[in-house]
Image (cartoon, rainbow, N blue to C red; front, top):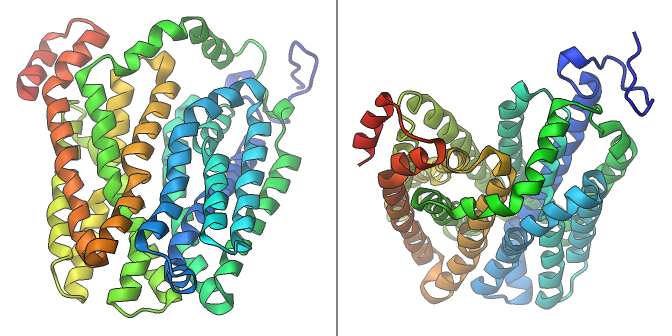
Amino acid sequence: MELRTTAGSVPEAGTSISSGWPVSPRYAWVVFALSFGLLLSDYMSRQVLNAVFPMLKAEWLLSDAELGSLSGIVALMVGLLTFPLSLLADRWGRVRSLLLAAMMWSLATLACAVSATYGQMFVGRLFVGIGEAAYGSVGIAVVLSIFPIGLRATLSGAFIAGGAFGSVLGVSLGGSVAQQFGWRWAFGGMGVFGLVLAAVYGIVVTERRLAPRAGSTDARNEEAPRGRLRELLPRLFSSVSVICAYAGSGLQLLIAAALMAWLPSYFNRYYGMPTAKAGATAGVFVLIIGIGMVVGGIASDRVSRALPVRKWTVAIICSVGSLVLLMAAFRLPAGSAQLLALAAGALLSAGTAGPAAAMVANLTPASISATAFATLTLANSLLGLAPGPAVTGRLADSMGLLGAMRIVPLAALAATAAFVTGRRHYARDLCRLTGPAPVTDRKETEIAR
């Protein structure tokens, strides 16, 4: 039976109002696959630079601070522009915005391939960051809009893992290509891959085919909060605990960002690995960091079913654990013991990402959850992902890379302090948002204190 919208257009085959699928399931999964592919391109273009740090340092005689700035500028642009570009995409068109973004970061990556100086490379990387700024928030919004509500958590988790997979591919493949053909080909390959995917995406995915059914529940719910947005925005920072969640998440990710940016150089300098092997080895640790994000979220959900305040406990354990393990790892001699401690520390270094996101979701109104996550992304970028590589580079110039890697884990002290403070205020702030606490929540309040 053929179903028609009020506009008279024919939906995709297999679409039914009762199924909960705004488009056909087959088409929805095609869109997800293409969106996931662009996510891989996003992170491959971002992380390929880290694999060729040794080559750039030798060819252009760059300091570690300059190398760190080439990595940090991307995260800085993402942090600064995620919010405004996401709002612009909602008004201009999400698919058009994604296509423009993918083309920009791909062309900018190609520009990096032909850079002749540090200044030219810096400008290229700046435009990579501008292109990638809103892809995470806009891309997942496109995907979630065409799937049933019951699949949203699964799809969001897949996108988190996709960032880690893209980082691994960028570091490992970039290092291999750079060793075989030179660092320029590494950038060139990533840029061409992004342009090809963008072309396919533009042909297959259109605003018309993604349009939700007229009168659907989701469509009505999306329109509802807009008139009250100005009143709800102050609630993004309405409590001590939500501010602590923003701060703790960003500060902890400074450690993960430093590891992702500098481990290829670390293995090259202190283990004597060639570029390809150093990149592949670092890729394994980047994958471990990504797995830690997912595992931290799963652990947080499991242990906090009875007492939601335990989310903070998971974050505190991850933060303190990463501090102890990484401080110990970089004081051990190069070898299997150091690699084992480093792997364990890397696993915990970003394990706070899932719990922090859950805290922010619980502490902000559902009607502005997307805005709250954009704020969290801003905190992650400005406090962690942007300064992590740059600060490590500056420290490395004065005390060597090993000395810098021994200092960076101390950021976990500030992150832990934020999580401990947030935990103390969490129950009270949650009650303020949801109303008077029932009897069972009073025990939680006592424990939180």
